[in-house]
Length: 384
Image 1 (cartoon, rainbow, N blue to C red):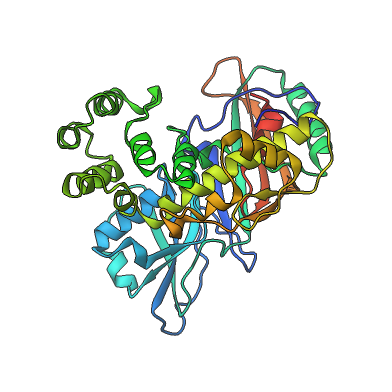
Image 2: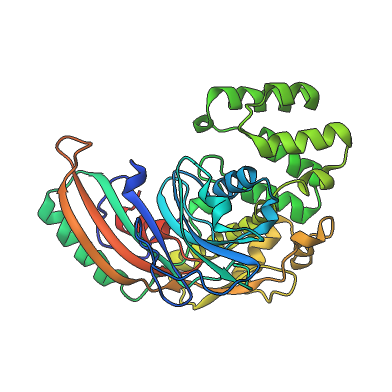
C-alpha cells in the first residue's frame, strides 16, 4: 500500500484507541446485519447436527475466540466453522457453527470478552465466505482540524471515492502486531520449510512485549527448542506447539507447520498472495494505468506484465504456489477486483475528542462486501 487514489487533503487522526471505536457487524448471506448487543429473535428450528449461533467478542481475534470455545467445550477446533475473521482490537459480531453441540452446552460457559446468543440448528456448517459482508462503525480520534473543516474534507473525500477505492489488503492480513504472515508464506511457497518455521518462531517486533521479544531473540541465537519452550510466554500456544513437535520429531518442519490450526496455516500462503497483489495495485495506481482486476496468484493464474515482473523479483513462479512440500496449502489463484465500492456511508458525528484535549473525533459508518478491508478505505480518509 504505497499510494493513494484520492487527492483531497487528509483528516489525519488515529483509529482503534479504544475497542469500542471499531465495531464490525457481520451481514449474513440473507442481508441481515448482526447488530451489536441485539438478538435476532430467531427460532431454534428443526434439529440438525450443526448448531448455529452469534458470537460477539471484544479485543479477541476470531481464531482466539474459537480456541477459547473449543477449549471450554473440550472439543476439536475443527468442529467450529465461521464465515470470516474479524479484527482483534474491536467489538464484532459473526455467526459461527459448532458440530454436535447443544445450546445447553454453551449456556454453562462463562467466557470473558465473549457473548453467545441466537441459537438455531442446521444441517449446514458455516464455512469461509458464507457471508455477504460487514457493517463498520469507526471512530477516528486525535484529528487536529476544526470541526467544520473535518466535515468538509469527509464530504470531499466521499465524493472523490464514490466510484470505488483501492481494494488493498489491510495490514491485519499480514499480522498487525507481528507482520510476518506473508514472509512465512513466501518461504512455504519456495519450499523452505525450515526457514518458514524459524521465521514464525523467532522474528521479533518491539510492540510484542519484552518477554516474547527476548525469548525469540534467544532462540534465534541458540536454536535450542528445549530451552525455548521454557522461555516462551505460555500465551504463545502456537509457538509452543511448533517447538514441542520439533523436540519430538527433530527436523520435521513440515510436520510442525501441520500442528497449527487450519485457518492459520492457510493464511500464510494467502498473505503472500495478498502482498504480491498490493505491490501490483500500487504500481498501477502510481503510474495511473486503468485496470479492473488483478490476480491473487496461484498455479492456475494468468499473469499481467506487472505481476509477472513482481514474481520474477521475488524469485518464484506460478507453479510454486502448488506448495508441493505441503500440498494442502497450495492455491489455484483467483482474480480480485482492483477497486471496490462502499455502501450506506454515514457521518454519525464530529465532536470534541474526549481522549485528546483540543483535538476532535469523527464517527463514520459504512458497509463493505466480503473480503474488503475497512482500513484500506480509512487510509484514503486519513492518509497516515
